[in-house]
Length: 358
Image (cartoon, rainbow, N blue to C red; front, top):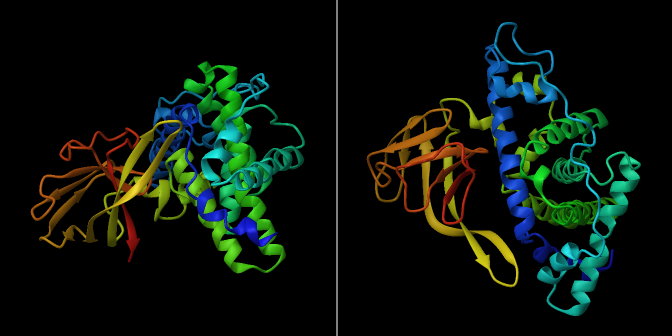
């Protein structure tokens, strides 16, 4: 790949999400990650599965008799099918927001088109014009680049089935064909861009380019879905495999009564509304270290009480602060640090604190 393309990587890893795409996907993905974390935790503890697990095909046959959970009814494979609206410019807007010159914008637009071609080749048209199919491809692309190993076909089919069932019950089902077309196109472009750089880097033995592709994939994961790439990769793991191992990061860490020891750094989610809509995480200088049921900070530490949903700080710098557990991180609400509002997604102005080192 030409050297000039590598200069685009830093911009691509900071890709903004268009407003229409952002509201359509955040709740659906975050809800599924949290739901499956709860279900996997119940499996791991050999407890009855909560009723919410019945809507995910991956838990078929695993519901404990008499649990009260209704058998799942898989959604139709066409549940997220839509009729494309021609003339959309969502991908062009993405390219325009990233490039600093007409030449750069043209290069990004050209590379972004590879995603649709790769999607058609990979799945041979079976998930064409379905939001669940585009999202499966995006998540599989992030997992491939991050782990340097492509998820197997069965795992991708399971993910499609789960996403199809979940998204069919979300706001996406009620969105216009125009909005669905924009979301579909952006997901395919965001999947194809890091894959193009990753495959080229592997073929030419360019380790730096492979690492840059990983940074790009992680950037798209955070910007488009507001989740860490590890949480997306976990969505491709069979429930049995997840249940047999202790949670460490990502969605699996959303349950349990202990946080991993180590230093936690905090970022603030900021939003820009103008010609385009974008979100990004900014450094705050805030941070703390956790060791067992205690924490330390520059201005004094104290204790932490951890539940599956909330982390409460007592004494020291963050006395009275309570954070909601979300995808392996702790989220403190904007100007309302004592009210974690567990179960909600992260919003502009919230602090997101995640483990940065052991």
